[in-house]
Amino acid sequence: MLIENKYVAIAAAVAFIAATFYTEGDWIAGFGAFALIAGLGWAARKLFG
Image (cartoon, rainbow, N blue to C red; front, side, top):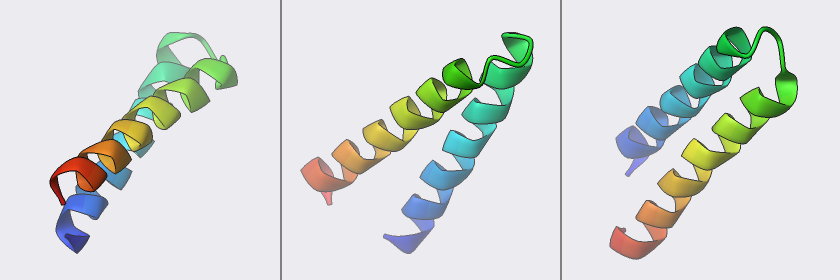
């Protein structure tokens, strides 16, 4: 399970950086993308873990 958590954390960080970059510095979009990916990872872990 630890490896899966690392992948979700990396994906969330990349989503934060990409969303912040593509929205020209909008941190709210970055945090929204981070929360979306992290939330999906958490839900998948709860449902399938």
